[in-house]
Length: 314
Ligand SMILES: [Fe+2]
Image 1 (cartoon, helix red, strand yellow):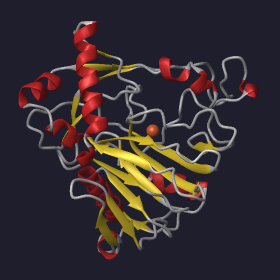
Image 2 (image 1 turned 45 degrees about the horizontal axis):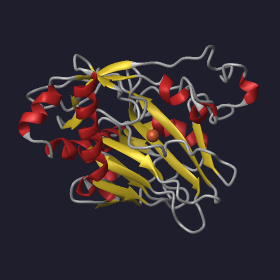
Image 3 (image 1 turned 60 degrees about the horizontal axis):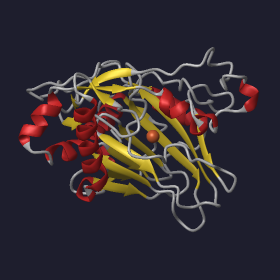
Image 4 (image 1 turned 45 degrees about the vertical axis):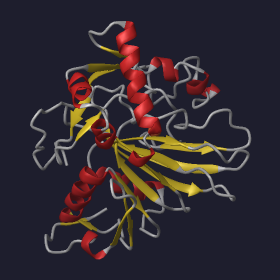
């Protein structure tokens, strides 16, 4: 995908931008994502750093896996999932498919940010839905974690800001859920050739992170991957994580739902939002393709919270 270096031509100002809620999320229509200038990439990065979710409504030009990969690479290196089979021939792509025979639907198991078990987690996820269920359903729910953080009493906010969370992945993927997203022919460990050995990474991250571009501060513990808070007793840790989960799941004023039309592409910033899929359409079919972009900025909590207006490796 060619990048036009002309600084004068920008697509985003000419597109139709609509806030999804006053708090976060934008829908964007009338943009061709296959013809982008360097300024367009900066504009999209700035928008998502403040709004968290961009729902690109079709048509937007990204109608193949190769085009999705090319668009995603504008924002950095693509992540290879360590414990789930990649889409055939595309090591950077997950195919998310659920139908009448499915026992699990990938990503619908509860609120989470993607791949927080990685030392360098993913900053952006790009999901393109190619088949939607005929009677609706299959929405993706999002929660804006700066708004969730702001719901905490300041003294509790200060407690979270001093803590670090442990984010393992074995408990999620060395399970029937994980095995359902591998295949028998992948071998005893259930891993394809692209993944040489069973790998279940784990990582430690601050419980409050500061977005490097916008300076927004967000609660960064999630119910899928964060199992413990460092330095806390089991009971203290459980109580604080339960509080974070309760606030995330129950604060409807901090949430939005993306309702998909076939071909839509939604991009979200995992440092600002959590999400969960809604598997409410069985026995019908929903198919999507997912790419994710590695975060080269180490996640930190910055008390000043100003951000520096840019990110590593754009
Ligand atoms: Fe996810």
